[in-house]
Image (cartoon, rainbow, N blue to C red; front, side):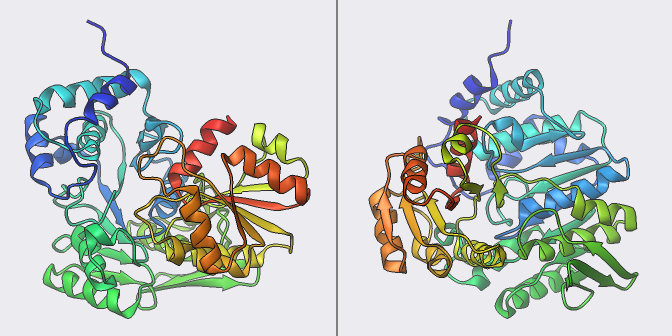
Length: 424
């Protein structure tokens, strides 16, 4: 009997629970038990939580490990163009036959019980990882941490918490402290936790959770320091000073993400070669990614097109700071957001660096904010705005008026994924 394609099985999985998000670990533990508990057979795990920077930090850690010859499993979400991007097995995106097989096995083992799409696909990733030898497993939290489907590892090698800020308040709480408590749920008893720069409110909560778990903290500003130094960056901890190139991932905020990655690598015993590779070899799409080819680029002519998937106020502030550092050029946003996000909070920092905004709805997303609502939020934030039927239409409208513009497509990873699919 031929296994159905992964797309068919994933479509079936979407119908297994009435909610997209329903935070609890009960269903995950039930399915993992039915699968023989593959989470207990993984190579050493590096577990990463936080509001912003999880994916970039994971990409840097992976680049450092792979430069030392390590075989690395990696799990991330959401995907951009294809689901396969979420599961990297021993350094390679999971192949279609293997993905279809583990998805089918999980679907059968679940027996039609309620389980969310993210929960069952996380179990599939863990099953694939357990069956392939590797040296490390990188697990990126999907949402929160304490009740996230990835939080099933009794004793990871190290945990990492990137900067915590406001996002997903309807699930995680309406203060930074409450959100930090959920993120800190990945901290395990007597397991070291690397902590990026945090607000005092978030740090107090993380320190309290770590204290109860007797988990040593490796915290920015205490056990390690990182910062720019002319056109390079410096990292320092108890093992000494590293003078490194700036991260190849664009943006000043990537220096902090690099610091967390370096702290994790150094804690695990890796040296200068892994650390340099972490900042020079990492690749992470839709994080201020310059599009260089494809139909959208051809339509743009002499205009630049950039793509970024940040979607909360902290991401908006980081994006504005990066744009401010670039050579001056008329800058226009093409923005589409989900209706669960703080649109005004994201857009307000951009009003000081962008000349205008074209609002679009995100293709195929039920939770998209309408173009009209995004345009209204932009106007309220101080950005001249227009509605557009599509990203392509917005590009054409911009280059017709300003042929040499800098165009930033932004507001959601789901929009970024649609653009990458459309642009080939």
